[in-house]
Image (cartoon, rainbow over all chains, first blue to last red; front, side):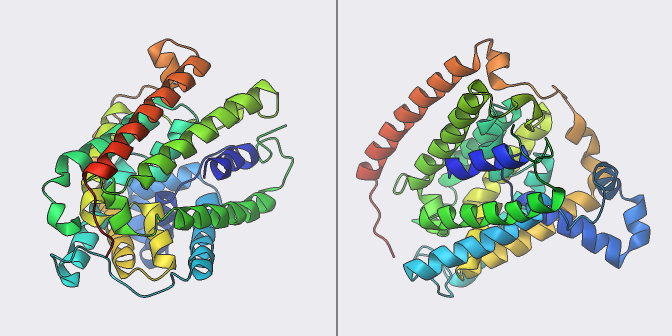
Length: 156
Length: 196
């Protein structure tokens, strides 16, 4: 994984990321569905001010499409391709999926506030010795450890 | 020489194509390391499976050392490599909210795409949540805009902030990581959990 991250920095001068691709999609969708509200949104305006061209013609969007392909290939080789919901036997699939949804919402919000997720801010930030990368990494893992007891039934 | 794209050794379209190739590599190693499994990812917080911790830190340190050596050999101009800016308030607040999302949802964005690619339904639902979360942030942006830009420290390196050289910091980080791996090994023995 380190070598892939190194390669990204060497070739493109940037690290890996994931949440940015979701942001690009949201920006594209908002502009497509409601151009008027996109005009007034500070969130969208800051994005379009900084980026030229289509938000989907973006490094992270292409990279994340690659992640889907790469993960699928690896799963296919290892024989792990299977529709499945993973959870502790102590809870139902339904409860697991509700928690996954809320976890996703929090992570999505947090990734925008924190200027990147575990990949973009923590991992890639650490590789280039960014102070913010280390701070975010500690905040993510620290909070998850602190809350682990509360959500233990979900996992063990 | 590097970064190749910034120095225009390769065109923008080639760069995007290589982003796709790099993504394939990223997805492949994530899946091979077991990051497509939410229970494995969550395992690090209960001590029963700490592979994630090891791969994460080994990855960050490998890339960090690689960049430092590439810079030393003159292969890459570190001043052209993007360094994530530091806005202290949002870095902490975002991290805390992400940490809560991590322990609830069992994935982070990158790993959820990886899990989704091999058919994990919880990963697909997590991704739906991600879109809602990013949308909420965008929709309510005026509410937290001030927090988002608060405590702007520029883009300092952690080594500069601590007043030590990059190399010394890297060495300390390696020692810290080794210490953590040792604790992780101990935790895996102490809190075993059978696979389901």
